[in-house]
Length: 54
Image (tube, rainbow, N blue to C red; front, side, top):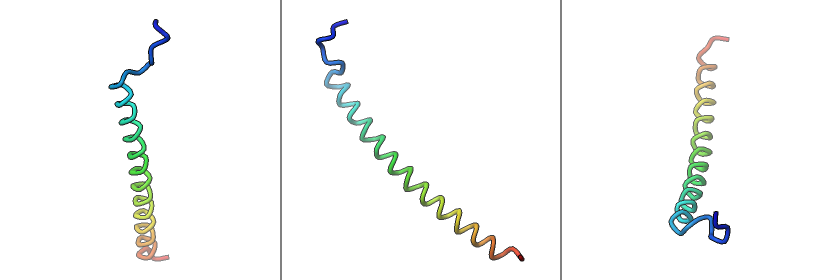
């Protein structure tokens, strides 16, 4: 194995950059969707508690 060569060529480096950017974007989407789902679950729970005779 030639250790003097860069382990990634230009295309591989570009793909790694793209994958890291996509990963960051997907993490943001996950965070947003998690917050939306949590809020929705709280709203549904509050509605169900109001309708249920205590």
